[in-house]
Image 1 (cartoon, rainbow, N blue to C red):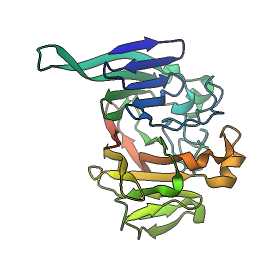
Image 2 (image 1 turned 45 degrees about the vertical axis):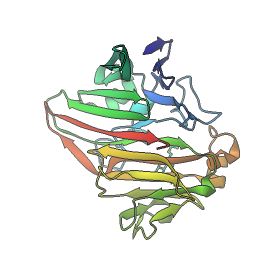
Image 3 (image 1 turned 30 degrees about the vertical axis):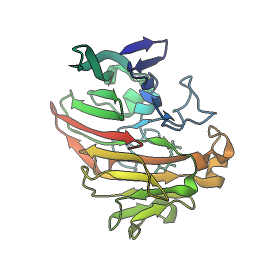
Image 4 (image 1 turned 90 degrees about the vertical axis):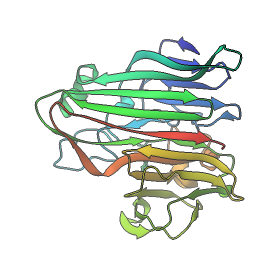
Amino acid sequence: PSVDIQDNTVKATLPTGQSVTIHLYGATVTSWKTANGEQLFLSQKAHLDGSKPIRGGIPLVFPVFGPPPSNHATSSLPQHGFARNSTWEFLGKSSSESLGKDQSQEVLSVKLDFGLSHGMLSEEFRKAWPYEFGLVYSITLTKDALETTLQVRNEGKQNFEFQVLMHTYLNVEDISKVRVKNLENKNYVDKTRGATSHTESSPALAITQETDRVYQALDPTVPIVVSTADDKALFSITREALTDVVVWNPWAEKAKGMADFAPDDAYKNMICVEAGTVSAWQTLEAGDAWEGGQSIKSRL
Ligand code: BG6
């Protein structure tokens, strides 16, 4: 595979044409292309210069999801934490190959690793969250899937609590024809209805208005499937150690209200399906490590 490193992006391309682009700012995946084209949504007004978290792609949420609670170690951090608005370092690539039929080497996948640690944070973030941590974020591209895995290490002497979310903006042609499956009978918190609790009744959820739900206690091995209304699978997402899934679409009014969201009606071309562990805190003891991730298969 070829890996092209620019000032602030890393792009890997498989010999079969699939590619992934990551901005060092936030280690945000900003493009994932398969034979069927771009799979991720990126706002036309996304800030790509490090002045704001990137609106689109896969921003990484750590160590807190949403506005931080008061009286918690994360209280002084911005919404969704600091991982998506810090500059990461590229640690390197590795690839896996197998012998093809004609005995030539065939590249099956490429993995790109990115790192972030306490010492790399801005002074403001270091003060706001004074823990010694190490993050390694691995992004693996195969012919038909994109995997993102986060390893969190506690390198200090104190325990800390964290939440993680892979805030994936999927590219869809027409939100009115999109369904989200395998959420039936699952409990969720509806952030558009005062964070009240509900149970999903639909086997194939349609998005017809502003949607902001945290589905909880899911079996990570059961894929969340994003399909068309006539049941053609668009994406299938399995997770490891991530038992919550957020489904978010800002809809017309909220989209218009976001300065970095463009064009205004692009809410019709995206759906966020976000794998995470956000409804409780993960406690990481001094010296310990935690790992979780997602695998997104495209157009099965
Ligand atoms: C989602 C949250 O994960 O992210 C929403 O559930 C939030 O409540 C959305 O509006 C976008 O957040 P931000 O900070 O990127 O505008």
